[in-house]
Image 1 (cartoon, rainbow, N blue to C red):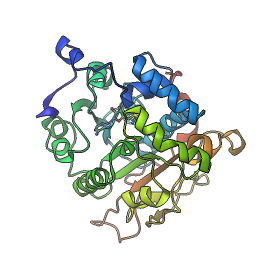
Image 2 (image 1 turned 180 degrees about the vertical axis):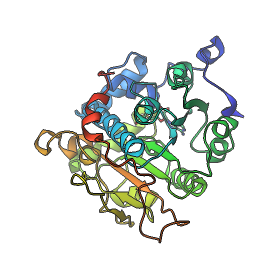
Image 3 (image 1 turned 90 degrees about the vertical axis):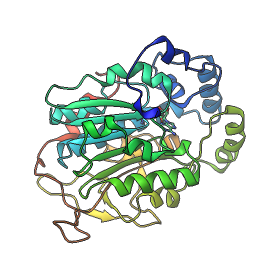
Length: 329
Ligand SMILES: C[S@@+](CC[C@H](N)C(=O)[O-])C[C@H]1O[C@@H](n2cnc3c(N)ncnc32)[C@H](O)[C@@H]1O
């Protein structure tokens, strides 16, 4: 019943925090310039930075991808429910803040398995009164526990479209765990839902850097499984990619079927960027794929014509995104 635990900052919750080993949420917080990390997290983060010097930039770019994708779903695709799995230590603007900026009635469930996130989760429970947020402590490796949790069912209606966020989390699961988790969550989503996925990769980095990663993992105590384009595409194969290039004004971007070789996947920095191409960091410095994948609404549309879920289309997501960078509040 892990999932029954709600946001709390009790001594018992704090006591569950193991400061002696690095944890992904705290290490990510360290890279992003937050305050919620311990020596083990910083050592681990610095060891990774020694091999991959742009890891802080990569973390930021991943975070900004999440923000642009949520803005797209709430602002243009009409999504009003979100399930954000592997949310991390809160960092404003969080998913509900971005989504409710477009539609105050958005409902968001956050999930993480790290007790430190639980102790900070109150910051995720600041919903607009028109909407709702909930925090559920659960493990992505047990997707049934997430799907069966009362906190999920009280907050979102799984018979209606949901934006499922799996952002920078699947690479902490091994192949079997990740494949099963995505398959089970996908199967539970209603037509018209979307999956926002980002995932670390060594595809963009030099052979020398890639070769140093296995040893780094052994030393770091945190399992991390970078995956190839084909492996990441496999999680969303059969769905429809939102075109990473913003459509021309007044047009609706086509949704392209995703196949297992994954040409539809781009570096997170190239997913509807909010700056010009020459201001973007290099793909090899970020080393992270990003995709927003829609599930066809087979009930009302012919297969292959994944629709925008509701006509909110003219919102200018790109310019609003600029206000959503961490630190800009
Ligand atoms: C790198 S952070 C990403 C945070 C946020 N999604 C983002 O992209 O800004 C990864 C998060 O996934 C969580 N996580 C890792 N493995 C998990 C699992 N098996 N179940 C649930 N959460 C997990 C970590 O605790 C951490 O908070």
